[in-house]
Length: 262
Image (cartoon, rainbow, N blue to C red):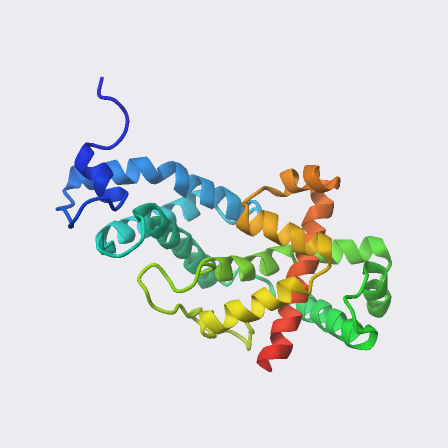
């Protein structure tokens, strides 16, 4: 039985250790696709965990495979980037493009997000600091149970916004150019903005989050822990961490709207 792993040349190609490109034969392409299939499934499962149940994980995986094939075709080993980094960028980007194209978010949910953003913005402006849950709930005329339910209803949309930003968190994209978020929709502050400018604004906005929300964002997006793992670290339930995440995203959206004049 052949030992698992790449043939030597293909391994060198994938890790950007060769001095020049090599021909990507069908066998080599198949080896790369098989090797990176677990990564595709991991990214798809991570996205799907925060999306409505009607979004198919298998569809995300199919998009991820297309993204990987695109990475194989376009990868330049002379660039100062590892193939795994480049492939992950393309895989995640293909999945996000598919989710954006579906336009699966009901208008009622978008209206709720707008209402929440306004409440957070008004409270922060009035108080001169991040608003607590009870203060935002009071501004909305809701009890805490209904307020937390509202956060749960909007979690998928706010989640996708930051995933789009995470797609280019390290600077310009793997091909060396500034990345812009495609397909601007409805005056969204995350849409059609130069990514380098947006990264600076997001970094500043994250620094201004309440401590536990800032830590949740850091652990989830940059350390890639699950909500359950973060809950174990912070001593909260997974549901509570999910609500912290939603609040952090809403605060970020509110701050970005204000600073981008959207």
